[in-house]
Length: 351
Image (cartoon, rainbow, N blue to C red; front, side, top):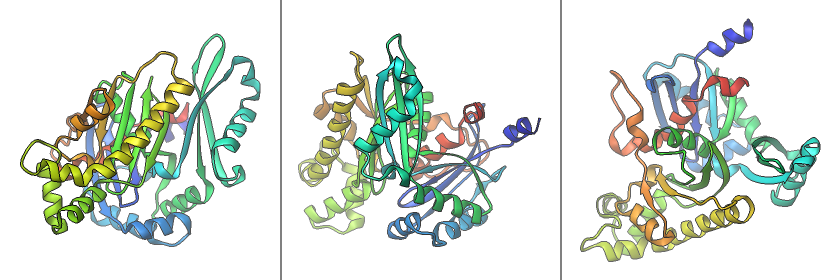
């Protein structure tokens, strides 16, 4: 009976990224937002706080909860997302007969592909597909120090974590509910400082990757190449972008090196998916999300470069803010991850 009451208590999503913390509470049956907020952080201090036990994260979580919430947060129980770039996720197949020794197979996968000793990692795995001959297993590994420091920060802010996942998994949850997520989908999540890439198939992330290039990188690229102030560069990025116009050639030239590095990482993820996981199933769409996706023409750019349909996703309409004021249009993409966390079905946590 205690467990039933425990499950019924509301949950809130809390997303820690390199540049900020976001929080949101959602009634998942109605996708009704009851409270939300965000606070910007210093990326270097975030990095230090994730790798050590200073008070920077806890102090800012407290400030966010106490001073920057629009609406009401109904609980102290948190589903937490951590930067995808700090996690290691892989999907692999093993013969059905190896199921009894699955833990050993996971440890071999960790030893082969993750550049951190297994005794310094928290490792979790689950079977996501079963055929007559094979099992498909998804494995996630995260440095223990990172998780321990995040949990300490939440505890010091009087919050309790009940589930932790990479940010890209939360993004996938929203896209699956709003953007024909039943299709095999390549997700390109362009944040302010980094880009996460993943293949979503059958409700699960099959493979992920990422790199340290984001929307802020694009602004710097334009500022340097066109010799303009950062504020002007931002305006050129969000108003002109890659769309046809008198400035298209110069802006495209400025963004090309960073975009090509993102494309290189995308192709690595696609190659892994095709070689190790795909059995004639094809990626059917590319969805671009995140605060750095506000570059006009970026969907068409990826369509042409990858030769597959790509577009900037707009899952925002799924969320109902009721009587709460909505975030301004330019800040809405930053809440996609935390909306995915807040909309977790509690049955999925306790099963």
